[in-house]
Structure formats: structure tokens, C-alpha cells
Length: 242
Length: 218
Length: 52
Image 1 (tube, each protein chain N blue to C red):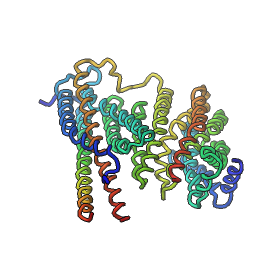
Image 2 (image 1 turned 90 degrees about the vertical axis):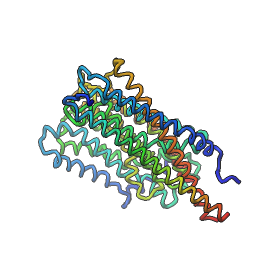
Image 3 (image 1 turned 135 degrees about the vertical axis):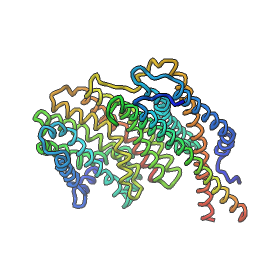
């Protein structure tokens, strides 16, 4: 009898073991190139001065904060429908990464906003939405930790992720309405870079690529850890019963 | 179903059922606010709708674990699960009972507390309406959170962490109705959104709550 | 070598410092935990193999 309960985790670990060094290396390269290029070799913005350099951190981290949650949502759905343990564990693995990305987005957003708005924190709709997203991440991570049974935890957290996603989206609209109503016309969006000049855009793309690869590498690594930890728990339980 | 509702109502009102605690908490929070921000009437009048909404929300939050924890502990939840009632019906009844024993009293108490906070005259009606429409959402969402944490010892803090972010849209729109109403502005949009959230939650969340309870009862 | 950041030096440098620190921390914790769990699992499997 195979000691592993299912083939999936084995294949996953084997495949990711091969991919990880490449992902990690490529991510470091992209991050270094993107950030160095953006920091040292781009000019200042007409309106925002040198703070525009924060864009190479703020935009990628904000993108990843959202995408991490979307990945968790998809993984949760796959667990609910197809019961692949790797999927549930991948969602668990991704959550702290998404949470850190959210914190980076918030910190860089606040630091960027301070010279522009004159306060360390402003309840700008986008920043506020990210703050709420951070709370959703915390709740999700906390629920995983609170439940002993692995399958029950996977089931409950996946339902939480689903319901949470709906409310997170609802919150986004609510927050937009809430701030817009109070400060009509004074919306200072940090992401007014719809027409970002090429000179900023290219290093930004490289930086975004770096963050995406970093996310993938971390999720693969952490999912491996979750799989192994789960297996260790199962073996210990079996030992105790024998 | 009615029998279940009546049973829950009776249990809540009995001594030890925690019936008055929500109201008492609401009162205490309202009294604390002027101590925190100063007694200046103008300021209090401006923040009164929001404070009252937050006080009601927190009072709801504190009574959430009672919805399911007691039945879980003495095994009645297991019995209910095997009853001919669908689980979705059971959680809806539970949310209903919570609203009648906690939400509704808060709604009725709010205008009285509004006096303490110098709520403007036009604000009373809108405060009442917004709480009346919004507190059912708080009960339904809270039941979902209670179902998630029902088996956990000392799950109270986790329950708060899970439920409060879910409460944000209801709070935003509810408080907006109360605030705009008090200032004489149009309340159409937030009122519609608030009603939408309450109806949507009532219609859809019981399915999620039932699924969660079934998982926890396994 | 260092570009002139002007009056925004604190904000920009602060952003880079915080972000890089958080990423490094995240990677370090992830790698440390991965190694620890891997070793733990190997120990348990060894023990089971010996006792059959």
C-alpha cells in the first residue's frame, strides 16, 4: 500500500521541485532589473516628483494582492467541486503571500500619498478597499489555524473565501460610494497613470513580472510545505493508533 | 418551523438568555462616546447617526455566538439536523430569532439613544428605517459567522474577525442613509443598496450557512 | 550614483525599504518553514520504515 494517499501531491511536488529554481531565479532577475531600472534610470514626474518611483512597488504589489485572492477563490472552487487536496492547500499557502502584498500596497500607498495629500493616511477609496481586503485575508488565515481537522478546515475556509469574495466586491462599491459622497470632486487617485509614459511603463512591466514570478515561486514552495505537513500529521496519527 | 422560532424566542427571553445584554451594551457604548469625543453638541449631532449604527452593529456582534453555540453544546443542533426541516430553514429561523430578540430591540432603542447624542430631528425617522432594514442583514451575516465558528472553544474573537469585514457594506450604506437623512439630503441610493444587501443576504446566505453547519456537524 | 530625490527622499526610500524588507521576511520564513517540515517528515518516514 502506498504511503501517500493520492497520486496528485506526489506529482505536484515532483513537478514544482523542478520548476522552483527557475522561477526563483527568474523572479530575482526581473525584480532587480525592474527596480534598479525604475529607481536609477527614470526621470521624475512633472507633478509628483521623485515619488513616481514608488509606482514600481505599489502597482505590482496591489495587482498581486488582488490576484492572490482570485487564485484562492479559484482554488477553493476546485476543492469544493473536485476535492483535490493540493488545491485546498495551495489556497492556504497563497493567503499569507497575498496578505503581505496587501500590506506592501498599503504602506507604499500611504507613503506615496503623504507628500501629495499631507496626511499619513487618507480614506481614499482604493486604499480603503485594500485595507478591507487585508482584513479578509486575516480572517481566512485565522480560520485555517483554528480548525484541527484538515478536511473540515479546507471545507470551511473555501466557503468563507466564496462568501468573502462577494462581500469584498460589495465593499469596493460601498467604499467608492462612501468616499465619493463626502469629497465630491476631490478624488485623488494614485492610479491616475492611465497614460503612463513609456519611460515609466517598461520598467513597471518588468517589475510586475518579477512580482508575479515571486508569487508563483512562493506559492509553489509553500504548497509543498503544506502537503508535507499534512502528510506528517497523517503519519503521526496513524502511528498513534497502531 | 414556527415551533422552532417560538422555542428560540422563549429561550432568549428567559433568565440567562442574554436578552437585555445587547440593549445594555448599546446604551453603554452610546454613553461612552461623549466621554471620548467631548460634549460639544454640534460634533455629537454630526456623528450621531454613525455612532448609533456602530453601537447597534457591535451589540449585534456580541450576541452572535448565542445563536448556535448553546444548541451545539447540549446536542440539540444534532437533533435539529436530523429533523425533517431543511438546514437552510433552520439557519433562517435562527437568524430570525436573533433579529427579533436582538436586532429589533436595538432598532427601537436607537431613537431614545439618539436624544443623548443630539441627533437632529429629521434624522430620527431615517435612523429607524435604516436600522430596521439593515439589522436583518446583520443577523443573517452573523449567523453565517456563528456557523463557521460553532465548534470552536473561545471562538468569539475569531467570530468578530470573520464577521466585521462582512458587515462593512451594510454599515456603510446604513450609516449613509441615517446621516444623509439627518442632513436632509437624498437617501435613495444608499437606501436601495441597503435593502438590496438585506434581501440578498436573506435569500442567499442561508445556503452557505447551512452548508457550513452540515460540515461542522459531521 | 544615487538620483536626486529632492524633498520626497523619505517617502521613496521608505517605500523601497519597507517593501524589500517585507519580501525578504516572507521569503525567509517560507524557506525556513519548508526546510523544517521537510526534515520533520523525513524523520517520521525513517522511523516508520525502521519499525515497519
